[in-house]
Length: 203
Image (cartoon, rainbow, N blue to C red; front, side, top):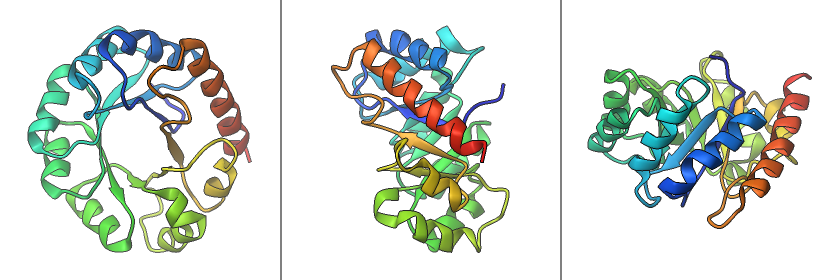
């Protein structure tokens, strides 16, 4: 299953919203979907979405802080873990269970700690503070084939800035989903994000 490198971050989603919202995202072309664990009954949402969309999308968890959280997500059918920091125990348990690991980094020290622990890719967060210039500087010393994601301030208006410095993709949070948004609003945002991503990736 190939994916656009766009991770939709559904912070605050509820289990009853999970399948309709995730289905809408998949239909728009976004097939990497993160449910942060500080959302209501997040593991249940992950389980419902993973069961409904297992052949069409990867459903993962964000704001993962402990190895126990990793095990709960894996048990629910999640396939990737996004953490806000470079906790080697979380990364290690993620890798041990065969899930993909995307820890949050802000400095070269963070980045190399995550790489040594087995990270699949790196989440530069908050990207709007680090900026494209900061990512470019770090990219020069990172493994060239390691996927980098800009998260926190990334949106279709600035995708090209981050593509230009070597980012593979983006995490989209409140841009693409906020509690109370309708499915139609999510679809509209997703369509705009996919169009901007495809334009940037084709350059």
